[in-house]
Length: 319
Ligand SMILES: NC(=O)c1ccc[n+]([C@@H]2O[C@H](COP(=O)([O-])OP(=O)(O)OC[C@H]3O[C@@H](n4cnc5c(N)ncnc54)[C@H](OP(=O)(O)O)[C@@H]3O)[C@@H](O)[C@H]2O)c1
Image 1: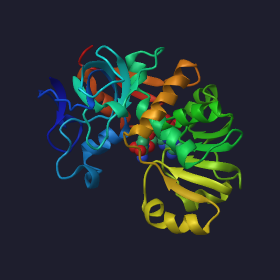
Image 2: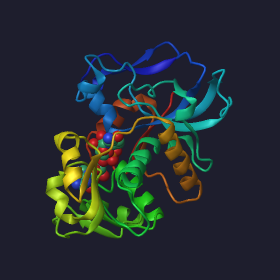
Image 3: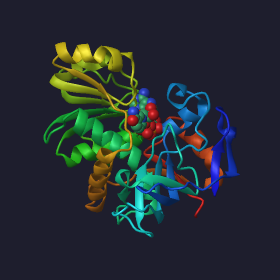
């Protein structure tokens, strides 16, 4: 099959097109012909060798976490999917695999694609929506009527968080730069703070959750803005969230947590919730640009700017 292969860590030029072996499925797996995948920041962090603790001395041969595509083979034990079904989901980003013509996934870790979305739209959702859903609902225990702050509300994770929090009937304060004020208001943010002009930490004891989607503020930096009983959740683990968190979470009324999503039965349940929200019109994909697969290097360079609004999607080899 055709794939985008990475032989060594490095700049975008290490992304090469090659012919590789098609994956062989196990009895509990399905083979998906990838119609579209999205680029997440973790893809280029892996490519650059920034997460070698998790990826090892050599990069995974094929990058990519998000996918949407068509089932072309089913394992002997698979009962929920048949050949021809449209599915969407994510694989472990540190192992990769979706920048290819086919990817194999476990039956229990995938989900039928939302019926009202194209493959390109569906591929933009899994990683960012599951991250936002688990951060706000599972870790932050966000309830109807709560007040959530989303730092980085114009990115892929941020805009997913905004839509999930609004669906739960929450008040949302979001942080972004001047150019994105209109789009985040349109997506439902109630109060917008422009980080280029305002201090984002002036409101004290205001938030039930401080969701640091862009991960550039520490717990100690923002804790005065969080209610007693509230939670700080960040998308990047740190010394504070790994080593200090167990102590802080015992002695402080304000909790500190980080999210690290992995494909699992639990994340597939979240995908099913996302599918339902999309089909009911409560969650819409926001895609800044769709690239043809030949422009994978441009797609990475675009994501690496850190300025993307919503998502970047790449059309699969099948298209
Ligand atoms: N732990 C996990 O399981 C997990 C899962 C998914 C993502 N992540 C991580 O979460 C982070 C966000 O991911 P993403 O997909 O949302 O990234 P992204 O889409 O690339 O984020 C881009 C957005 O960040 C905003 N931004 C940049 N600097 C900012 C600042 N100083 N303050 C506020 N907003 C700022 C930009 O808006 P402006 O142009 O307006 O600044 C832009 O809209 C990444 O580091 C990613 O690796 C972790």
